[in-house]
Image (cartoon, rainbow, N blue to C red):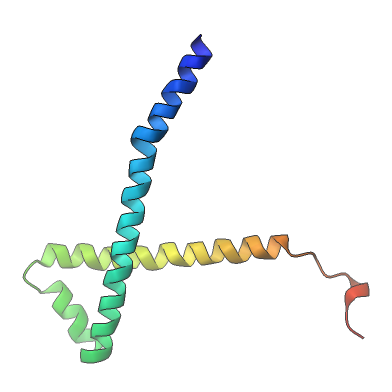
Length: 103
């Protein structure tokens, strides 16, 4: 009975805590992606210094700093996802042997 109880509490922990945290994390990553795209667009239209200054010195400077941090987080997360996908694909690919080399 003790083991069944532990498995049940682990499921509750998974569904009540871990999944909402993952949802929140990926929501912030997607928001940061939107902010990064908007900042990139503003940087192309007005110049990078003007765009960053507007983000940091706008009406809500704390919100601007949070959005800028989320944009940086999104870039880091998507870079890590791309690196993991490339590494996984490379691991699945069979190694080239000397007999397979073109002559």
